[in-house]
Every structure is written in structure tokens, then in C-alpha cells.
View (cartoon, rainbow, N blue to C red):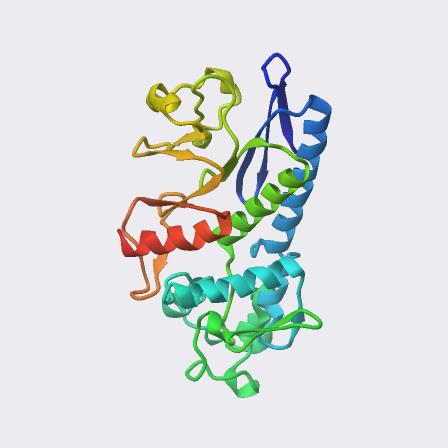
Length: 319
């Protein structure tokens, strides 16, 4: 369900929308267009994000990623343009970061922490019945799956092919988890949608961690704490707003919820990574296989998807 509020008295008018997606919350502020146009754009944004959520959520049995995780170690799996792009980007990011950004890291965690699923059951059939979404992990190496001693358990074991688009895993226990990368991709997709709709001033906050802004906050010396997602933008204030007039561009002011830092975004993105967003943490250092003991790391980039890779890398290397 999408929620929408509009302030017609504001000059220019301001609209605020929010809804749940990818196990978190998506917030959008638009400045300028009239209410009818903003409502139409909001519906387009909602439809696009929810479609990506349905494709990229590995925990959903009917998602494209779940289907790939279940079948790609056994056969070529046809995939969408969205997933092909994300997997290709993830492989490139893995290489550029020296293996620190790894969408397959949960595979290694599961292997090292629990052993193979097959080893825990008396037969392949019993294993498959218990884990219908991971049947490939229930098949013993003797049945033709490549030995995991010869194939790396990382994105290099993902084989992408074109015409038609398809993917194959070379490791029987490989699983992909797009996580923040999917959120960053969704933000970039919505930025393009807003560009096509000629929205000149907007703010996007997805899960309080993937944020994008364009133009300027409306009003004199404006600011907004997107991580608190306050709908009444006209009343928001920040200590930094006193100095906002020193710049020819105000942009959007983003204050981290814990008060540790504040950022000025001028037609750019802010990505925050940390192990305090999920119980027990989720960011693992591939070099050690252990959770990173740090609070958070933030980076500003031109695209949200780039920010996801760089903020995770920075979080690991600068705990």
C-alpha cells in the first residue's frame, strides 16, 4: 500500500509518499508538479519498486533470484535484463574491490557454519523435501555436480551468457544475495523515472541507507533529515541550515539518525552501510569470514548502485 500527502499551500507545492518494499521503507519527496501529476508519478514509482522487489528478493519463493538460487547449479536459467545487469555489476565490483564486495558471501557463511545440506539428511529426497528452494545443495558431488574444491565459492563461479540472457553457477552451494545492491539499483531506476517525468527537485530515501537527491530543498535555507522520514518538511530545521546561504546551491541536507554526521547532497547519492541495521549484523569480511565490528560507513557517489559497493568496502576496510 502506498501513502501520499500533498501540501498545496507550499510554494512550490510539495508531495510526500512512502511504502514498504524489500523488507524496509521507501520514502519519496517531490517538489514542483501539481497534485495530480505527483500522484501519477507516485503510482509509477510504487509499481516499479514493487516489481523489482518481486524479482530480487531471495527470500520469496516465487522471485527470480530464488529461482536462480534453486536451479542455476544444475542448468542454465533464463533471467531478466535487470538481474543480468546486477549480476554483471556485482562481478565487476568483486574484482574492483579485491573481493571485498561479494554477493555470494552468505554461501560461504552457510557452508562454514553448518556444512552442506545434503550431509544433514539421510537421502537426497529427504533433503530436497526440507529445502525445496535449494535443491541443488541437496545433490551429492557424485551425481555430477562440480567439486567445490576446484571451483571458487564467489562471484567468479557465476557464468553469464547473452542471446538469450541466462546464468549458470559452477559451484553446487553458490547462492546470491543482492541485498543492498538491489536497493541501490531500485533507487537509480526511480531517479531515471523522475528524470523522464521532468521532476527537477526530489529526495529519495530507501531503507534509510540508500539516498538520492536532486535540485534543492524548497524554502529559505532548507534542510531535511531523510532518515527520520518526517512528512511535514516545512518545519524541519538543522544547525547547518544557518550556513546554507553561503553556497549558491543549497541542495538537500541529510543528517544521520544517530547524529554522527550530516551531509549536503547536490544532485548525488548517499549510501550508508552498517551492522546495526539487522539483528546480529550481516556484513562479513570475506578475508576472515567474520562479522565486521563497526557501526557505520557512508559515502557520496554519482549513482546509488555504486554507493552500495563502495560503502560496504569502506565499512570493511575502515572499522
